[in-house]
Length: 205
Image 1 (cartoon, rainbow, N blue to C red):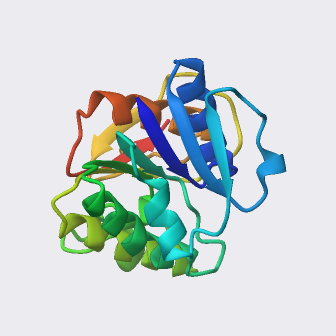
Image 2 (cartoon, rainbow, N blue to C red):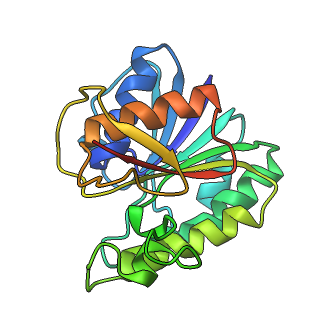
Image 3 (cartoon, rainbow, N blue to C red):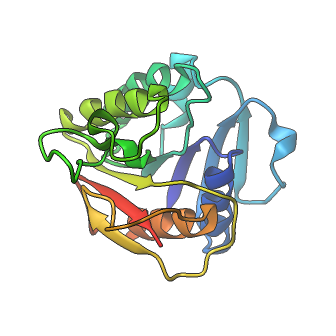
């Protein structure tokens, strides 16, 4: 499979790249600092900025699927990049996309008519990241793409142990955290298996 990964140098994105290469897939990534990536014969690195729409669209040519592990980092990079990613997928007739979101955009257990960040499930005062991911969720939901959004809760660095729980559209009950390793492991598996197309997937231990 030929994969395009945005956010390939991030904590979760780099783990997904590693798993894809390990399984023999071809990976192409648009990165600002190629030196952050370990060279590999099946990894093609293009230096650039995901906010450059034309560069993003060109990246998607020839791909079988797209992964966005872009973060927010208190910027609008994610919401600036996503329209170009989606347009590029339409132009090049690529339907499968998996993105890494946040548990804040899962449905609230306090008020089912709201998302977690809107209802205050997590008691987090800063909602900027969730608001950015919410915008992406709305973009994908209104599209015809085969999308899945993996929504981890508190995300410390850590290896995959495989004992996580997942649930469609809500966070598993009493879920407190999930490692970057297990988030990447599930995201990669779901990208390939396509079991949850059209859903946000809450993941936690």
